[in-house]
Image 1 (tube, rainbow, N blue to C red):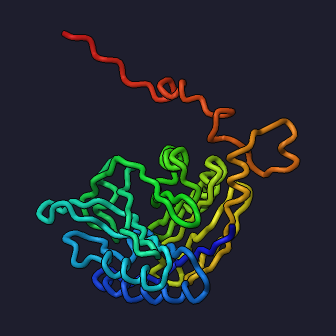
Image 2: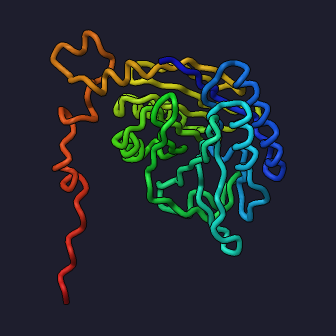
Image 3: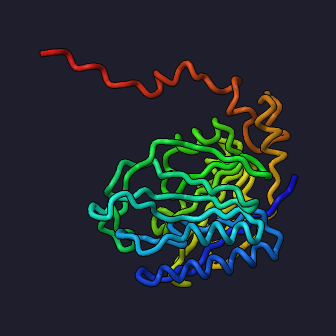
Length: 285
């Protein structure tokens, strides 16, 4: 079954004016619906806010727009914990087009709070989450992650082992010297998890280089460095076939990625303790 994903790589409003991103996002959602999209994917922390104390909450309007237009909307925001301490979770949310209650993922990696403080864009004391939820949709099971978690293969593997077939990994800003390795890892996460992986990022000028992509296990369906909204047709049939079949010595003549890597032909859960050994207890003094 084919469906459409509208990948939005926006020219985001500057810090201090980021609440304007909400109106822009609502317009993108309407445009995506007009082009037959089933999902809209926005970047990390878009529409915002980017800093604590949080001046606004985009979730009510994102939920309203998703239901109005019948489109699943993946977007980013922060979830305040303590305004006095400046602590917050970093969220990737999904508002359902069918009116169901919205869902979210709290970024789990790396350890906080250094990653979102002292830089040019974000300013809050990041608190890491501890769960890897997956969510049902009419198109397939969805996993949410974000940004440089692409460098932690355990994150998307945890989602895939829980059944995620479409993994949205929106990112933040211009990747600079990391661009090439980041691009490769997006595709790698699709290959090793036999899933469709979607990413995009914020741009603050046309001089910046974006990284919007839709990758399947066997190919990159779409990529662009430019600002805009891009509608991509996606089909999960091939990835599902590869999840449900076994690799053989002749598979390379027909498949561009290894089959069955999430199943018993490849997985050895009895070795996971050996892969991630716990520190030995210190002897009592």
